[in-house]
Amino acid sequence: MNETRPRPRPRTSAAVLIYVIILVAFQVFLITVAAEAFLADEETLAWSTAAVSVVMAAASAAFLRYLRP
Image (cartoon, rainbow, N blue to C red; front, side, top):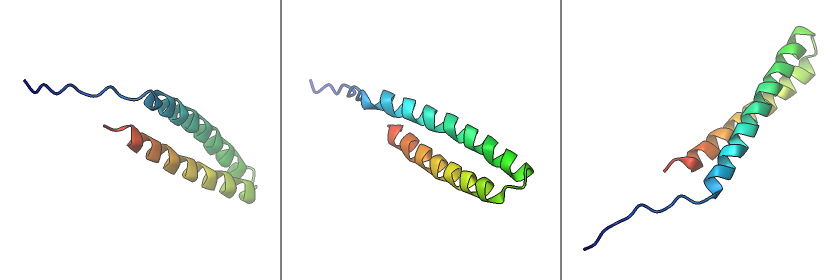
């Protein structure tokens, strides 16, 4: 018989998931800092933290795409 068993997922997927959770948590912090900077009229800080937050969102999306089977 030619029985096909599903391959076990590599252990790196758990590490990538933890990395994504950390990235999202840091992104929430950056969004908070950006919002407070906008309210305090510190546009340079607001736009730079917003830009870093967007980059982190893209990195999280790329890592999540890696996790899909």
